[in-house]
Amino acid sequence: MKKDNVFYQSKFEHYRVMNMWVVIASCISSLFYVISDWYLFGEINTTTVPARMAILIPFVLFMIVNAKVRDYRVIVPLSYLIAHSIMWCTIWACVYLPDLTFASDGFIIIMSIFIFFGFAAPGKWSIVFTGLIFADIGIANTFLHYPELMMMLILGIPFYGGICLVVWAMEQSYVYQYVAQRMLEESAFHDQLTGLFNRNIIDTLVDERRSFQCFDGAETSVLIFDIDFFKKVNDTYGHEGGDVVLKEVVDIISAHLQYPNYMLRWGGEEFLVIMQGSLETARQQAEEIRMAIEQESGKVCPVTISIGVTKDQGGDYNTSVRLADEALYRAKESGRNRVCIS
Image (cartoon, rainbow, N blue to C red; front, side, top):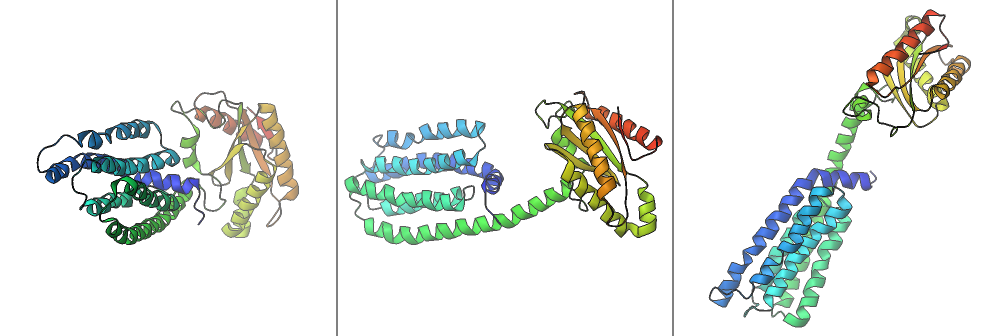
Protein backbone atom coordinates (compact mmCIF):
# COMPACT_ATOMS: atom_id res chain seq x y z
CA MET A 1 0.00 0.00 0.00
CA LYS A 2 1.29 3.47 -0.89
CA LYS A 3 1.93 5.55 2.22
CA ASP A 4 1.03 9.06 1.14
CA ASN A 5 -0.06 12.26 2.88
CA VAL A 6 -3.60 10.91 3.25
CA PHE A 7 -2.29 7.85 5.09
CA TYR A 8 -0.01 9.81 7.41
CA GLN A 9 -2.71 12.39 8.13
CA SER A 10 -5.09 9.56 9.00
CA LYS A 11 -2.47 8.00 11.27
CA PHE A 12 -1.85 11.35 12.95
CA GLU A 13 -5.59 11.93 13.48
CA HIS A 14 -5.85 8.50 15.10
CA TYR A 15 -3.06 9.28 17.59
CA ARG A 16 -3.55 13.06 17.78
CA VAL A 17 -5.06 13.15 21.28
CA MET A 18 -2.47 10.69 22.56
CA ASN A 19 0.29 12.83 21.05
CA MET A 20 -1.04 15.91 22.85
CA TRP A 21 -1.13 14.11 26.21
CA VAL A 22 2.38 12.76 25.66
CA VAL A 23 3.55 16.36 25.23
CA ILE A 24 1.67 17.46 28.35
CA ALA A 25 2.95 14.55 30.45
CA SER A 26 6.52 14.94 29.20
CA CYS A 27 6.68 18.66 29.93
CA ILE A 28 5.09 18.40 33.37
CA SER A 29 7.30 15.44 34.31
CA SER A 30 10.44 17.30 33.23
CA LEU A 31 9.62 20.08 35.69
CA PHE A 32 10.05 17.59 38.53
CA TYR A 33 13.64 16.91 37.50
CA VAL A 34 14.41 19.88 39.72
CA ILE A 35 13.98 17.46 42.66
CA SER A 36 16.79 15.25 41.34
CA ASP A 37 18.84 18.42 40.97
CA TRP A 38 18.30 19.16 44.66
CA TYR A 39 19.40 15.63 45.48
CA LEU A 40 22.67 16.16 43.63
CA PHE A 41 23.17 19.56 45.28
CA GLY A 42 22.44 18.04 48.66
CA GLU A 43 19.97 20.85 49.38
CA ILE A 44 17.10 22.85 47.85
CA ASN A 45 18.84 25.04 45.30
CA THR A 46 17.11 27.34 42.80
CA THR A 47 20.06 27.52 40.38
CA THR A 48 18.55 25.05 37.87
CA VAL A 49 14.93 26.24 38.23
CA PRO A 50 15.07 28.64 35.22
CA ALA A 51 16.48 25.82 33.04
CA ARG A 52 13.76 23.41 34.13
CA MET A 53 10.97 26.02 33.78
CA ALA A 54 12.12 27.06 30.28
CA ILE A 55 10.26 24.07 28.79
CA LEU A 56 7.02 25.95 29.44
CA ILE A 57 7.79 28.34 26.56
CA PRO A 58 7.72 25.73 23.74
CA PHE A 59 4.95 23.91 25.62
CA VAL A 60 2.63 26.94 25.49
CA LEU A 61 3.53 27.44 21.82
CA PHE A 62 2.65 23.81 21.10
CA MET A 63 -0.71 24.00 22.89
CA ILE A 64 -1.71 27.15 20.97
CA VAL A 65 -0.76 25.71 17.58
CA ASN A 66 -2.21 22.28 18.35
CA ALA A 67 -5.59 23.84 19.13
CA LYS A 68 -5.71 25.54 15.72
CA VAL A 69 -3.84 23.22 13.33
CA ARG A 70 -4.57 19.60 12.46
CA ASP A 71 -1.90 19.08 9.79
CA TYR A 72 0.59 16.39 10.81
CA ARG A 73 3.31 18.21 8.84
CA VAL A 74 3.10 21.01 11.41
CA ILE A 75 2.24 19.24 14.67
CA VAL A 76 4.65 16.30 14.37
CA PRO A 77 7.82 18.44 13.97
CA LEU A 78 6.54 20.71 16.75
CA SER A 79 6.08 17.66 19.00
CA TYR A 80 9.66 16.57 18.39
CA LEU A 81 10.76 20.14 19.08
CA ILE A 82 9.21 19.69 22.54
CA ALA A 83 11.16 16.45 23.05
CA HIS A 84 14.44 18.05 22.04
CA SER A 85 13.62 21.11 24.15
CA ILE A 86 13.32 18.85 27.20
CA MET A 87 16.75 17.50 26.28
CA TRP A 88 18.25 20.98 26.03
CA CYS A 89 16.61 22.20 29.22
CA THR A 90 18.26 19.22 30.91
CA ILE A 91 21.61 20.05 29.29
CA TRP A 92 21.23 23.65 30.51
CA ALA A 93 20.57 22.38 34.06
CA CYS A 94 23.57 20.06 33.81
CA VAL A 95 25.85 23.08 33.42
CA TYR A 96 25.19 23.90 37.10
CA LEU A 97 25.11 20.38 38.55
CA PRO A 98 28.06 19.28 40.65
CA ASP A 99 27.87 15.65 39.52
CA LEU A 100 27.10 14.32 35.99
CA THR A 101 27.52 10.66 36.91
CA PHE A 102 23.83 10.00 36.38
CA ALA A 103 23.64 11.78 33.01
CA SER A 104 23.43 8.45 31.17
CA ASP A 105 20.33 7.49 33.17
CA GLY A 106 18.66 10.80 32.35
CA PHE A 107 19.60 10.38 28.70
CA ILE A 108 17.83 7.01 28.48
CA ILE A 109 14.78 8.37 30.29
CA ILE A 110 14.48 11.25 27.81
CA MET A 111 15.07 8.91 24.87
CA SER A 112 12.11 6.81 25.99
CA ILE A 113 9.84 9.81 25.39
CA PHE A 114 10.64 9.61 21.70
CA ILE A 115 8.97 6.19 21.47
CA PHE A 116 5.58 7.73 22.17
CA PHE A 117 6.05 10.63 19.75
CA GLY A 118 6.68 8.06 17.04
CA PHE A 119 3.10 6.78 17.22
CA ALA A 120 1.65 9.87 15.48
CA ALA A 121 4.62 10.51 13.19
CA PRO A 122 5.61 9.07 9.82
CA GLY A 123 8.14 6.30 10.49
CA LYS A 124 10.96 7.91 8.50
CA TRP A 125 10.45 11.22 10.28
CA SER A 126 10.55 9.51 13.66
CA ILE A 127 13.84 7.79 12.86
CA VAL A 128 15.44 11.10 11.81
CA PHE A 129 14.00 13.26 14.60
CA THR A 130 14.90 10.68 17.24
CA GLY A 131 18.40 10.21 15.82
CA LEU A 132 19.07 13.92 16.28
CA ILE A 133 19.30 13.28 20.03
CA PHE A 134 22.84 11.98 19.42
CA ALA A 135 23.65 15.35 17.84
CA ASP A 136 22.31 17.00 21.02
CA ILE A 137 24.62 14.85 23.14
CA GLY A 138 27.61 15.43 20.85
CA ILE A 139 27.18 19.21 21.00
CA ALA A 140 26.58 19.19 24.77
CA ASN A 141 29.67 17.05 25.36
CA THR A 142 31.90 19.77 23.89
CA PHE A 143 31.31 21.89 27.01
CA LEU A 144 29.92 19.46 29.60
CA HIS A 145 32.48 16.70 29.02
CA TYR A 146 30.23 13.89 30.20
CA PRO A 147 32.22 11.47 32.39
CA GLU A 148 29.98 8.60 31.22
CA LEU A 149 29.80 9.52 27.53
CA MET A 150 30.82 6.05 26.38
CA MET A 151 28.17 4.45 28.59
CA MET A 152 25.57 6.86 27.18
CA LEU A 153 26.43 5.70 23.67
CA ILE A 154 26.62 2.00 24.63
CA LEU A 155 23.14 2.22 26.16
CA GLY A 156 21.70 4.75 23.74
CA ILE A 157 22.54 3.24 20.35
CA PRO A 158 20.80 -0.14 20.94
CA PHE A 159 17.92 1.71 22.57
CA TYR A 160 17.63 3.90 19.46
CA GLY A 161 17.56 0.75 17.32
CA GLY A 162 14.73 -0.55 19.49
CA ILE A 163 12.81 2.70 19.08
CA CYS A 164 13.15 2.45 15.28
CA LEU A 165 11.85 -1.11 15.38
CA VAL A 166 8.88 -0.16 17.57
CA VAL A 167 8.02 2.79 15.30
CA TRP A 168 8.17 0.56 12.21
CA ALA A 169 5.99 -2.09 13.88
CA MET A 170 3.42 0.52 14.95
CA GLU A 171 3.22 1.95 11.45
CA GLN A 172 2.77 -1.50 9.92
CA SER A 173 0.01 -2.32 12.40
CA TYR A 174 -1.76 0.93 11.49
CA VAL A 175 -1.60 0.00 7.79
CA TYR A 176 -4.00 -2.89 8.45
CA GLN A 177 -6.34 -0.62 10.40
CA TYR A 178 -6.17 2.05 7.69
CA VAL A 179 -6.99 -0.42 4.92
CA ALA A 180 -9.91 -1.82 6.92
CA GLN A 181 -11.17 1.70 7.59
CA ARG A 182 -10.93 2.66 3.91
CA MET A 183 -12.79 -0.50 2.90
CA LEU A 184 -15.50 0.32 5.43
CA GLU A 185 -15.77 3.87 4.11
CA GLU A 186 -15.85 2.53 0.56
CA SER A 187 -18.75 0.23 1.35
CA ALA A 188 -20.52 2.97 3.31
CA PHE A 189 -20.45 5.52 0.48
CA HIS A 190 -20.31 3.39 -2.67
CA ASP A 191 -22.67 1.01 -4.43
CA GLN A 192 -20.99 -2.38 -4.66
CA LEU A 193 -22.39 -3.27 -8.09
CA THR A 194 -21.71 -0.08 -10.06
CA GLY A 195 -19.01 1.55 -7.97
CA LEU A 196 -21.02 4.78 -7.91
CA PHE A 197 -21.70 6.80 -4.78
CA ASN A 198 -24.81 5.79 -2.87
CA ARG A 199 -27.29 7.95 -0.96
CA ASN A 200 -25.03 8.13 2.10
CA ILE A 201 -22.69 10.53 0.28
CA ILE A 202 -25.37 13.22 0.24
CA ASP A 203 -24.61 14.32 3.80
CA THR A 204 -21.07 15.22 2.75
CA LEU A 205 -22.31 17.30 -0.21
CA VAL A 206 -24.72 19.57 1.68
CA ASP A 207 -24.30 22.19 4.41
CA GLU A 208 -26.20 22.61 7.65
CA ARG A 209 -29.15 24.11 5.72
CA ARG A 210 -29.23 20.97 3.53
CA SER A 211 -28.16 23.02 0.49
CA PHE A 212 -25.64 21.69 -2.01
CA GLN A 213 -22.14 22.99 -1.23
CA CYS A 214 -20.14 20.66 -3.47
CA PHE A 215 -19.23 23.31 -6.08
CA ASP A 216 -18.50 26.27 -3.79
CA GLY A 217 -21.53 28.31 -4.84
CA ALA A 218 -21.18 27.71 -8.59
CA GLU A 219 -24.31 27.12 -10.68
CA THR A 220 -25.56 23.59 -10.06
CA SER A 221 -28.02 21.33 -11.88
CA VAL A 222 -29.63 18.06 -10.88
CA LEU A 223 -30.40 15.17 -13.26
CA ILE A 224 -32.24 11.92 -12.64
CA PHE A 225 -31.77 9.00 -15.08
CA ASP A 226 -34.01 5.96 -15.21
CA ILE A 227 -33.64 2.91 -17.48
CA ASP A 228 -36.81 2.36 -19.49
CA PHE A 229 -38.64 -0.95 -19.02
CA PHE A 230 -35.88 -2.29 -16.80
CA LYS A 231 -38.26 -4.80 -15.21
CA LYS A 232 -38.64 -6.46 -18.62
CA VAL A 233 -34.85 -6.75 -18.84
CA ASN A 234 -34.75 -8.57 -15.49
CA ASP A 235 -37.72 -10.76 -16.42
CA THR A 236 -36.19 -11.71 -19.78
CA TYR A 237 -32.48 -12.00 -19.00
CA GLY A 238 -32.51 -12.55 -15.24
CA HIS A 239 -30.95 -10.38 -12.56
CA GLU A 240 -27.43 -11.21 -13.73
CA GLY A 241 -28.31 -9.82 -17.15
CA GLY A 242 -29.90 -6.83 -15.45
CA ASP A 243 -26.68 -6.21 -13.50
CA VAL A 244 -24.68 -6.22 -16.75
CA VAL A 245 -27.08 -3.66 -18.22
CA LEU A 246 -26.79 -1.44 -15.12
CA LYS A 247 -22.99 -1.44 -15.28
CA GLU A 248 -23.03 -0.82 -19.03
CA VAL A 249 -25.35 2.16 -18.65
CA VAL A 250 -23.17 3.58 -15.87
CA ASP A 251 -20.05 3.23 -18.04
CA ILE A 252 -21.70 5.02 -20.96
CA ILE A 253 -23.03 7.85 -18.77
CA SER A 254 -19.66 8.28 -17.07
CA ALA A 255 -17.89 8.45 -20.44
CA HIS A 256 -20.12 11.28 -21.66
CA LEU A 257 -20.66 13.23 -18.45
CA GLN A 258 -18.61 16.38 -18.08
CA TYR A 259 -16.76 17.17 -14.86
CA PRO A 260 -17.10 18.24 -12.14
CA ASN A 261 -20.02 16.08 -11.06
CA TYR A 262 -21.23 13.56 -8.51
CA MET A 263 -23.09 10.53 -9.79
CA LEU A 264 -25.11 8.41 -7.36
CA ARG A 265 -27.07 5.21 -7.66
CA TRP A 266 -30.31 6.59 -6.28
CA GLY A 267 -32.17 3.29 -6.17
CA GLY A 268 -32.71 0.27 -8.43
CA GLU A 269 -32.23 1.44 -12.01
CA GLU A 270 -32.38 5.15 -11.10
CA PHE A 271 -29.31 7.41 -11.00
CA LEU A 272 -28.88 10.93 -9.64
CA VAL A 273 -26.28 13.34 -11.03
CA ILE A 274 -25.31 16.60 -9.38
CA MET A 275 -23.26 18.62 -11.83
CA GLN A 276 -21.75 22.06 -12.05
CA GLY A 277 -23.33 24.03 -14.87
CA SER A 278 -26.40 25.91 -16.04
CA LEU A 279 -29.77 24.34 -16.79
CA GLU A 280 -29.09 24.57 -20.53
CA THR A 281 -25.69 22.90 -20.13
CA ALA A 282 -27.32 20.13 -18.11
CA ARG A 283 -30.04 19.68 -20.73
CA GLN A 284 -27.47 19.37 -23.50
CA GLN A 285 -25.51 16.86 -21.42
CA ALA A 286 -28.65 14.85 -20.74
CA GLU A 287 -29.56 14.76 -24.42
CA GLU A 288 -26.06 13.67 -25.40
CA ILE A 289 -26.16 10.88 -22.81
CA ARG A 290 -29.64 9.77 -23.86
CA MET A 291 -28.49 9.42 -27.47
CA ALA A 292 -25.30 7.60 -26.42
CA ILE A 293 -27.28 5.01 -24.43
CA GLU A 294 -29.64 4.49 -27.37
CA GLN A 295 -26.76 3.98 -29.81
CA GLU A 296 -24.11 2.23 -27.69
CA SER A 297 -25.94 -0.11 -25.31
CA GLY A 298 -26.42 -3.74 -26.30
CA LYS A 299 -24.19 -6.10 -24.32
CA VAL A 300 -27.33 -7.88 -23.18
CA CYS A 301 -29.98 -5.97 -25.09
CA PRO A 302 -30.45 -2.40 -26.37
CA VAL A 303 -31.96 -0.10 -23.76
CA THR A 304 -33.01 3.54 -23.52
CA ILE A 305 -33.22 5.97 -20.64
CA SER A 306 -35.50 8.81 -19.60
CA ILE A 307 -34.04 11.87 -17.91
CA GLY A 308 -35.40 14.64 -15.70
CA VAL A 309 -33.38 17.85 -15.37
CA THR A 310 -33.72 20.86 -13.08
CA LYS A 311 -31.64 23.77 -11.85
CA ASP A 312 -30.76 23.80 -8.16
CA GLN A 313 -32.20 26.92 -6.56
CA GLY A 314 -29.96 26.84 -3.52
CA GLY A 315 -32.51 25.72 -0.94
CA ASP A 316 -33.04 22.26 0.53
CA TYR A 317 -31.56 19.76 -1.92
CA ASN A 318 -34.70 17.61 -1.61
CA THR A 319 -36.62 20.28 -3.50
CA SER A 320 -34.29 20.01 -6.49
CA VAL A 321 -34.41 16.22 -6.40
CA ARG A 322 -38.22 16.32 -6.28
CA LEU A 323 -38.38 18.72 -9.28
CA ALA A 324 -35.99 16.54 -11.28
CA ASP A 325 -38.06 13.50 -10.36
CA GLU A 326 -41.23 15.25 -11.56
CA ALA A 327 -39.50 16.02 -14.86
CA LEU A 328 -38.46 12.35 -15.12
CA TYR A 329 -42.08 11.29 -14.54
CA ARG A 330 -43.21 13.54 -17.40
CA ALA A 331 -40.53 12.01 -19.64
CA LYS A 332 -41.88 8.55 -18.81
CA GLU A 333 -45.48 9.60 -19.34
CA SER A 334 -44.76 11.23 -22.69
CA GLY A 335 -43.23 8.17 -24.28
CA ARG A 336 -39.84 7.52 -22.57
CA ASN A 337 -36.38 7.82 -24.17
CA ARG A 338 -36.46 11.58 -23.80
CA VAL A 339 -35.30 14.51 -21.66
CA CYS A 340 -37.72 16.75 -19.76
CA ILE A 341 -36.91 19.92 -17.84
CA SER A 342 -38.54 21.19 -14.67
